[in-house]
Length: 152
Image (cartoon, rainbow, N blue to C red; front, side, top):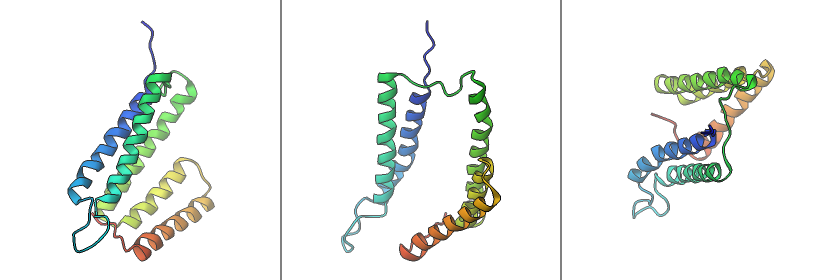
């Protein structure tokens, strides 16, 4: 029996499951706003974003079933060398989550930017400029313009 790679199929299913993890709780927040306040409710944006994630995951699944898939973890030395980077990225996001819980979102996001740029071997100058610009934009757009707080 021929071994068929299932890399894209697994990725698509992960996208769908990840989207569901956010879609279901967003429904409890309410898609529509209270009667006194016109417009969408607090669950509208998370529902839309997670719906798009699930949609693209379904397209990946369909495409992989029709056209075959990619073997992400084959015996190719180049693929094996990327496993270390994947592990480091997962650890960076775990550190981000822990820092966000115990400190503040912007501190955690800055550390995440610094770590990811370090993992992908960006220069120190690029790393610092990117992190300051990214955190500055997040702060201005979400905190000041939209009045959205990133709290847990």
